[in-house]
Length: 126
Image (cartoon, rainbow, N blue to C red):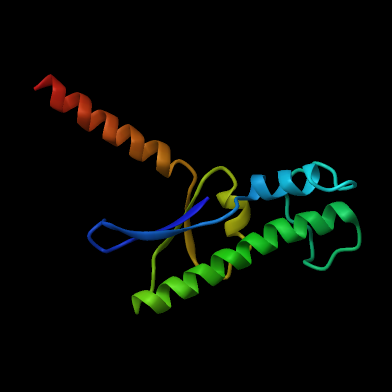
């Protein structure tokens, strides 16, 4: 997973690379003796009392907190407020638990690739 920073002109400034939700859960279940594979839903509370809800809490609320922290650091470095767009299939699940106001667009990457494809095929047809 990447947290990318794009300037007002649409130019890439830089990014942070971090472990994604599915990768983190797979590591927990495959690299530990007793933790199961789980679905990704948010438990009612962050403090939980059973293993599955504890894993869900760490995954959902931990990822949301990580996003909030990165956005604060990015804004401090940029010296201005950022527009945040969360993409991907799990973006909607995580964004609900972020303090950061964000636009959720699960298809942004696919839509961007389609626009690039359309532009390239139109140029070849000229």
